[in-house]
Amino acid sequence: MALSPDLLAILVCPACKKDLVYDAAASTLTCPACRLRYKVENDIPVMLVEEAEKF
Image 1 (cartoon, rainbow, N blue to C red):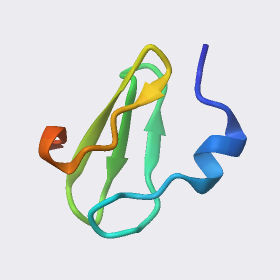
Image 2 (image 1 turned 135 degrees about the vertical axis):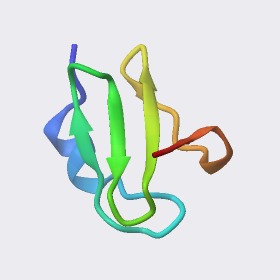
Image 3 (image 1 turned 90 degrees about the vertical axis):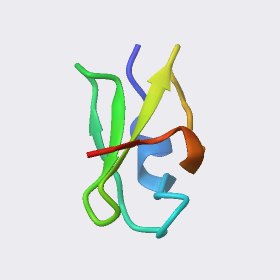
């Protein structure tokens, strides 16, 4: 199951508060502004800056 559109509409990057880009195939939420990528595990976004992947 993918993240709901309602949830995606309110999620923002916890570091900079900008919009995120959802990649359902990779199960990630990406912040182009901060260049951070957050994992989505079992349809739950892991929105911890210290666990985000820098790219």
